[in-house]
Length: 130
Image 1: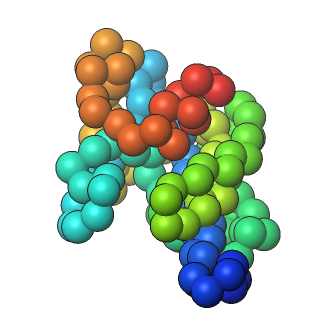
Image 2 (image 1 turned 120 degrees about the horizontal axis):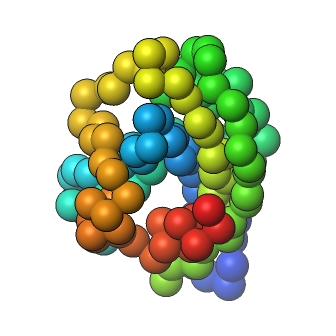
């Protein structure tokens, strides 16, 4: 988390790293647990970083994705909440079905089911990019 003082308030800036995974014509989503404004909403697999400069290798390894993927694209996003600024980076990956392991909490969904899941505004931005 990056912090900076603005006026008399502390502004928090987070770095979120997402991977949009396509495997066998399906996409992977995770339902966000816990407290907060995004609880129970769906998003791509994500790892929160301590800085804006994490690379795909670091993020993929942190999510348990170690090999056999093709990078289809990459995009950075800035998303403003009332109490914090989120800097997000998303990689769009294609992984062979025989090389993909579904982690706990991850769901593989066909396109129709994927589009029916409730998502937060930042996810909407990332989905529009694909």
